[in-house]
Image (cartoon, rainbow, N blue to C red; front, side):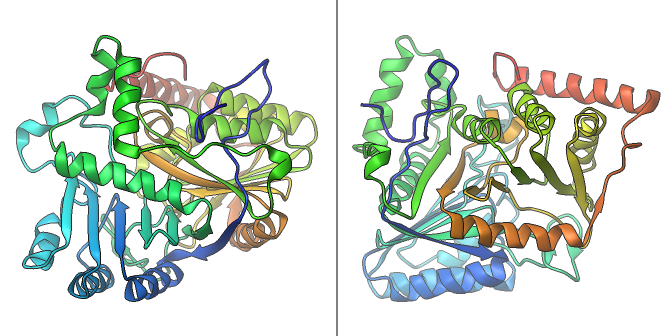
Length: 420
């Protein structure tokens, strides 16, 4: 029987990513909804709290959550926190001081506190997941970092909150989320200098890598046959550099490839590989309404250029493209045919799909999909549609070539092989 979370293709057909039933999944918009829910769960915790995030900032909103973790520790709750050494680099010292004198075990994944760390293998592979599990009963998964919704690290305070989403999960799926965050914390705390990229170069790497993964994660839950599933049906889909290298990419491509009516995809950093691009073009050609909502208010200009480099090709095949301009866009969500939906940390670009550690929840439930679709429709109303004239001419052609070359070089530098 196939291990849960793995994803393989047989005879060109999609394979489920490990759906299980018996879940409760609620959509949360932005930190304004997520953080109060997390703090309430933390306040009720009586056993343990595990939290992993790319950015844990030191603004008032973030420190309020840190104080809630300290309070839980004072009640005797076991608290474990891991942050990424690059994403949280500016706030690590402040957080260490905040947690000083408490029992909160604060770990840094691949720290960047010394200049020579830039030259260590695998330093471009970052912890980009946003996960929190409380007492093994409540899990929070999504794209929202621990930072005020109206604060951007590069542009300061903003009038409107960034557009972002997470989910609160209860039921069968929580244990899988817990296994993942425990694994990440353990690697950062106990194996501070260990790099999973090195496993790729160890003889018998597959056997060794599987053994290590089992050691870190413990036994994996097996997928139930689809006929036995009951709502809410969901899967926790990881991307790592061992066994799950392309699981999130496959989940997107498979869902788009099977679409019959509509595909709505929201993503700030959009430069998909050939497989997802091909799936989007084919879906549009067979009459599926395909809409992409991308960032119009850029935080990284090169990310905007990468997306724009694909505009002409996608538009020519009937794909609708919109740019969200009221505020910064950080959401990584999608809805297909009003039944399949995903919320998570993974962008649709080489960094997320082939390099970083990412985590998404995929839901097969009409009610949840309708809730997320309503949020997407609300965002589309205030967005700008890109016209057919976008992305044409010599300048656009040169930009496409430059972006493709940059992506190729980047992937080779981080050790990714194969076509993208």
